[in-house]
Length: 141
Image 1: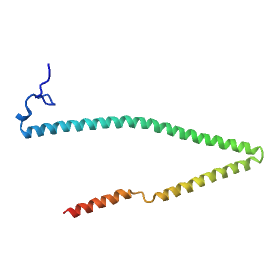
Image 2 (image 1 turned 120 degrees about the vertical axis):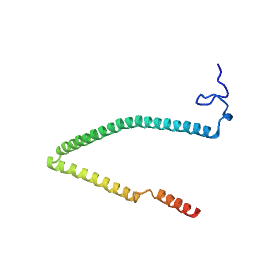
Image 3 (image 1 turned 30 degrees about the horizontal axis):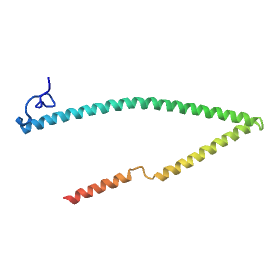
């Protein structure tokens, strides 16, 4: 059986013209509220799923970081052993330590310079646009 052209979205039958404005606004409000709740639930579900995946990814990156540190330790031992074939072991260990100190120093200086380029950690453009909005509102009065 075909649905009547007079049926509404929630299943009520009858001509919309026969209903009062207040009843129609109430029905629209209820449907809108339901839609918003459903959208919020969908957003929560989606965020939870993405959060789980992000947690797994972050864990894997953490594991990669630990493996990278172990790799650097092995590389350091390898370099010390190789250099110990040509110079005393204490001197090769000192030389490799100086090499890592130089790498750390260069990285620290470059990182500091990049942070200084950023400036203050406040959203300057946003602050400026908010000030403009407040000024616009004041001028409208």
